[in-house]
Image (cartoon, rainbow over all chains, first blue to last red; front, side):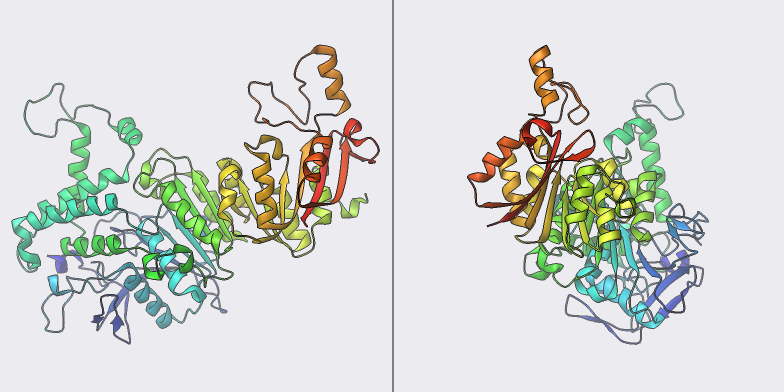
Length: 370
Length: 202
């Protein structure tokens, strides 16, 4: 039950206006939960909007209230870190549709009951509209930078395309301007796992014990494989057995990699709402920045003007590959936008943006320094 | 050259830096870690962009706050629109190009003006080494043995001039270097180790 998964009172604002959505619908009474780090300068010109990935949240550099674990990017954000909170005012908001305090399917709808599947289908651009509305409430007109990895990078690119006047810099890491058929296919596996779980109950499981936890765990396991690289998995687990000397000739988690995935899946259900997973993966699947701008990606960035871009891919990331990133670079070149791009070598696959890659630290710090 | 105006760059880059118009939009193809770009930005107020194939060098350039795209000039220069830049620079890269003629055409398509610098294979020490030993010369400007060198299209100053003569390109200026110092134009094809040409479209 999602309401029991958020026992804390997250810091949140209620948006003063209903949020218009790409679907044509409108979402009223929207709450956006967020965290900030570092002081906002008197001139209000040092704000950085950090956008989280699919299963991330606003606790980028502070202890997660449910898991007790450190923030998901503490190595990047903090005093003296590449995103230096001595200099920058970092804002990180939970996306709408999610379950850490922003309005999502577990939130109460107009009738007081959880939205569940009555929640409108949202897009990445809808998430960005909510972020922009949050910045309005916070009194931040222009960002020094918008930064995000993976789905966060999609938001960063979407913000650059739809609100170009609101940011001076855009940093997108391990991301894409369009979800591919393969990306959509993997997400569909996850969604079907959730919806095949009897506990899902058409999305109406709030208030019931359990919910579709097995389905959500399987969805997370499948997705997690896409976040890693073959070399990384082999390096970490190989074909080593878990807590045993011989194969069991059964279906226990004989292999370490199985045990690891099961752990990843189960620990995810403690902190994430299954319906949120459906809605957010759908938003990512619908993401196609070129399509939003008449089919030509360069036209998405036509209004970017002096906005500076920095794009980073990882050589082992097969989910959002260097080729995907090059399409963004080409589009930015076509409008003569100031753009940097680098493919970094890292062994960890897509997850490299969250892990110890010193070259990424140098690129991020360098991009923000000038 | 007076020390007060020196940028502490390689001599060919120094020459280019002094002749790029202030506040020009510049693309440095094969920009390395961005030494020239940093000078163009900081001392000449230019809007400088770079392209570099080596990820390590790109990372260093980006960490300096420069706008550098990791890419292969042999292919990715085609992505830039016509007249995207006032000046396109190709230093020490022409001899490594798969198709130097294509690269030069691209250079003067994306830039209204171009600076091209390359080692002169007709430098007298080259000739002497080849004549005396009968082997491919290895020098400071062209290091590496024949089997591991990135330089695949060696050329001479005379070759380059002849190439330009047949095309709609204006040779606006040229400078020559030997032993790390600028030398005169007389018999440059024999005396120069290195050349810089300033080109523009007809």
